[in-house]
Image (cartoon, rainbow, N blue to C red; front, side, top):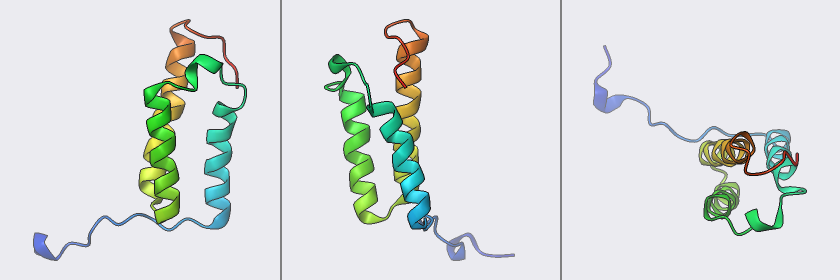
Length: 87
């Protein structure tokens, strides 16, 4: 049995260029046509800033987490009836 101190660390997975491209395309689908009033939404801005930093650092796990937050937040705005679906 492995000691808990010797367990491998949870390091970000390494994505290929195609993986990064696919992930950015998912984000861009939400951004294209976004209502102007949402551009300054703090949660959307924070997600995009963190995604950009994660991309620069090659941190796919953080990027993916923020992408999910972005997608969920946009879907929630539509589901609540605050906005028409734009993507």
